[in-house]
Length: 175
Image 1 (cartoon, one colour):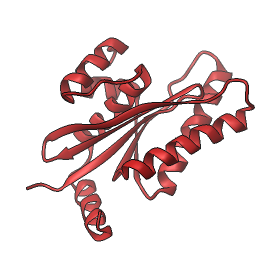
Image 2 (image 1 turned 45 degrees about the horizontal axis):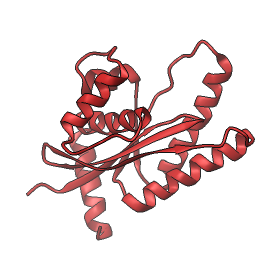
Image 3 (image 1 turned 60 degrees about the vertical axis):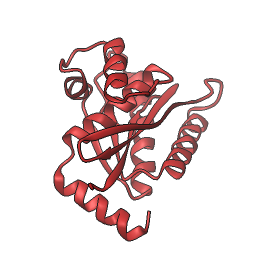
Image 4 (image 1 turned 180 degrees about the vertical axis):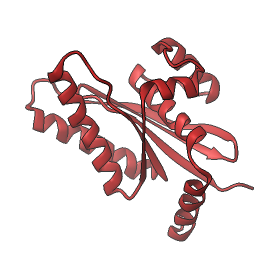
């Protein structure tokens, strides 16, 4: 029986950061949990980043994933929005790395192509395919659906060596 692994997908955003955790056993994917971390727009940027950090720390603590997949930033027309997204991404990368997770990054079009089959799929297509690939899963938001799609993409893209290393680490840690 193949060793089960868990992957955390993170769709970073300053207002809403989606997260999704899936299990992988051989070629079988299962939904574990998903959600959205929101930050209070009335707070300072630094305080909002702390809210995102605390939420991700809690998710990692509760679900103990073996690896994380974070969406790469896309070039936005609004430079200020792009910088804020970059800061939220930095929090996602930092929290994951501090937890000792292997972290992969995927471009939005790569995720869409991996999950839907088309690099320019819309949000409704992503949600539909996520829920088809993970029976019983109901994404709580578009951000959570995107995060689950990231985890699925990583499950499809992750190298065999990474899976073996994660399984060995997990077995050694007694999880």
